[in-house]
Image (cartoon, rainbow, N blue to C red):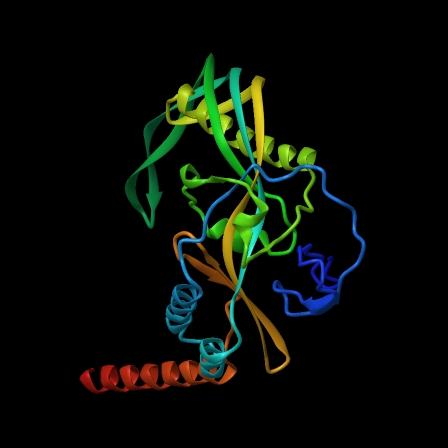
Length: 292
């Protein structure tokens, strides 16, 4: 089914025709969306129970002083969290890059200036540039790209790292008791995103190889070989709460317990902090004046 609010695609049992989207708590009805042809190759098992995930989320919320207290209580006592297998692509590639550029060496000169009738010595920075060229190579192993648009990428990115060495072969029966989202980022789009990541890493490698104090990169010529991919499912505990008319979403890494989500703010707590800060400033100012 496809959520009409956040567009997340989630698989349900054949006899379920209506449900609540686990990603944003919106009521949805199943449709006859397109069938996916690329099946998952592996799944990372849940290492945390729902109770573990709820405890981790409660601890995370407890550290957010400006969060509404009612939300924390509601989240702890609210409905169950959803265990979701979120789709990802992983890419491997062997890259070799030839580059040209310049290496900059910083040096200083001193000169004298007059300030208020007094001579002062100032240092001026200069950069001496030298031509540079070379070659770098890097093998990229398991570049991880989320294949879903159901959750903000900033949340899922923050859940890293994942121990992919614990992947198990995919089997429909293996996912019993959990929901699995279908991928909405196509393979070619996922690879384009992976290439952007690889290019950033290669540029960093080139600058390191050039050395010096400054670097200028004029050209990069990258050849890429032995590209492989996998479609995998990673475990995420998800909570979507509607509190006072607003939806808050929280995600917990089902392997490590790392938590990320929307950071709610309480207006009265912020106002209280501002007033308290003003009172402290007045007290400090009064004490300083008395001392003078």
